Image 1 (spheres, helix red, strand yellow):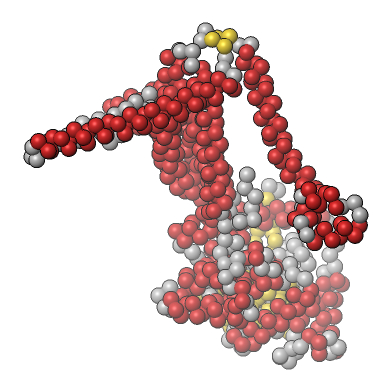
Image 2 (tube, rainbow over the protein chains, first blue to last red; image 1 turned 90 degrees about the vertical axis):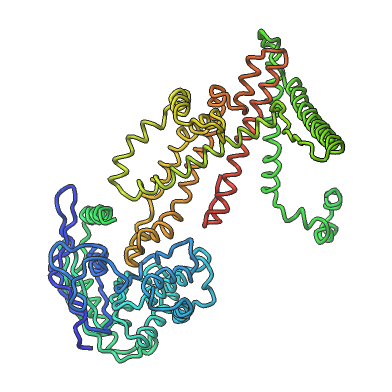
Length: 283
Length: 340
């Protein structure tokens, strides 16, 4: 657990806007060990997704950098698989084909066709989606789409799994269900995970560490909370657990007392526009 | 149906009847029924109104070739054209029969006799001309598509290329086929020289005119479609580090198919319009030449025959568009999408 895996050091990013550069992140530092489950939590617009996109290589940091296993990250790659908020499955491919696309890319020349097939089916099984593997995304529910999205990411055997509010768009029951599945998978595979969330319970339940971010502009890491609850964790048992509730309160206190969002609407828009702008350039 | 309407008055019998033939009627809600009735009646009403207007209006137009033909004369001319086609078939059959007989006799007299098999060389009928037109327009359209879609994809993938080529496309897009034709005619006449040409010059000229005029909408729409691929999907492609070809095949093309087909439909519409003009001037033996010949012919039947051609051109144009729509429905991954 102590082996240093991913290091985010002094990361800052400016987005160009018509009024000059907009500093979304400043001096973000974070060290993550192998097999750790880290959540990023903060108010919307605080730059959580930007951090994740920088780690994924989709955005380039203006200052500082990200190192994975001692190598600098400066472009996207399958060893840092992303589970997108809105699943981002290709709507013209079936669940199986969506996963196959990544598997073919990663395991070309390393696995035979039959092995790939087995591997894809194995990953679908992990997320309990074998029954719908030949269905297209518009034929399955939102929760199922997200399961396939997770399977696609897992099937690439990533060194680190980046999840951008993976359950944000789901209803509470489906979300709980998928959180349990994710815990199960993480226990079995021991993946390193960075997950963005705005759900306090989700953060406490799933994480080894919760990274709380301050509000933007120039957002950065505010506090880091170590969650030392024993695994496997059970949401029902934990509901009355004083330790669990202690962690929960700590996060809530950070979000609603220390970083209480005094909402000036206009700057937030500017940030959105800036993100849009930069994404165009990236694309 | 009649049964159900007669039994409805009393409640009990209505219940009993609802199990029986009314089941079919009761499934169709009143709103849907109204929709169906209006959907069939209104187009028919429009058509009837048009025919009436045509019939009455035509009688008031006097031309140098007599009164403008009404619907009735046009139907007569259609029948004449069909009859001519049948005559032509009969003549063809007779020709081959005679030839076979002659050859058989020649062989009988002298088994080593040289046998001549000639092909029947009749004048192209109206229906032959339709075939020629269809063949020409499809050749031109397919050539345009083969050029326009790859170009559109390449241009759409790069913002710089798009900016560079957009003015060129916008300049050529509105050029009339009649302006292209002299240039194409001269170029083809000097370049396409062969002792035994596979295609006639008039065909090549008409086809190239169609291609040049019809490829722009496909190119622009493909480029716009490609440029508009969802950013999320592009991110997926980047994370998977897909190579260029896989990226284009698996992500770019499927997501720009709807825009591509919008372009293709516009292109095919233009192609068909352009073709008629091109055939008139290039003398390709298709519908355009048919109209031109009838116009030059100037008999009392000519106007009626031109009207037949006009309607035929309209119907075929409509048919071409529907065909493309059906292909789109087949090719498009999103079967729930409403294409119209």
